[in-house]
Image (cartoon, rainbow, N blue to C red):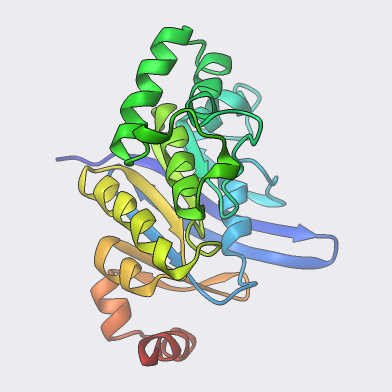
Length: 247
């Protein structure tokens, strides 16, 4: 099957004042790709994701979504973000709303769905992530793993073409990490296009089809997971992975 390019990033740089966080980033994502971005803290991974989702404005370079510049005048940020969903490290759920309402509000406001349609859709995705029994709970009544599964259902309910995950398990207790990774594995198997910033190396090695290793704001190495994990070419990749593999 011909896979269409969803996102193409070229010569992307991002500075905050004099601090250059990303420099000359080039990479692309096609339909069905599961791209894991790995690297030490502070290497620019989350900033890259925030640029892709227009939460940060790139300093130079461009990001194309199906060939259209996402910063172009014709691009509406809200409708673009509906197509490119994001799951955050800290869940970002609305604490004053029930689980069900959390998964309905974006559909009603952005996609202009009726309440009934939004509800049916929300229930379908909450069922998918195993959170249907909790539809009337408020976020404070849930564990971290449950909150993150609700956040994934909320993103899926917008029926995005691409899902971005920013370290979705790093705020979780170790015993809750598995339940979130299991949901993400299932999405990968179903062909969901995803870009995942993660410290979960086994997940990156076993689930993704493309690994990007970032160091000091540049892509130091990228490629097939089997090759990157078994035979990294860049000394920095080698050193980074040897620390993880020992663990």
